[in-house]
Image (cartoon, rainbow, N blue to C red):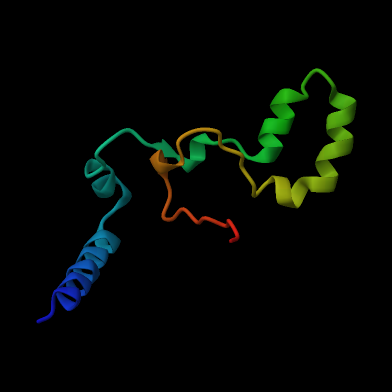
Length: 93
């Protein structure tokens, strides 16, 4: 068997093993601390917390961006510690 085929087989076996694990089982295998996605506020939650003192502007801004702002989160930090399935580089060259 060629080395490339062996690596492909090992990768597939590891993928299957990971897919069968529960979240708690996977967390036991992490090598360092992690940030669960549920701990990162959505854009809307962030806007609400920052605009509590200015309720009038919050009421005007939230309905316009509601659908998008409930799905998008902004994270400032090391993205490699996020508990997510993939990191995608959308840069163009």
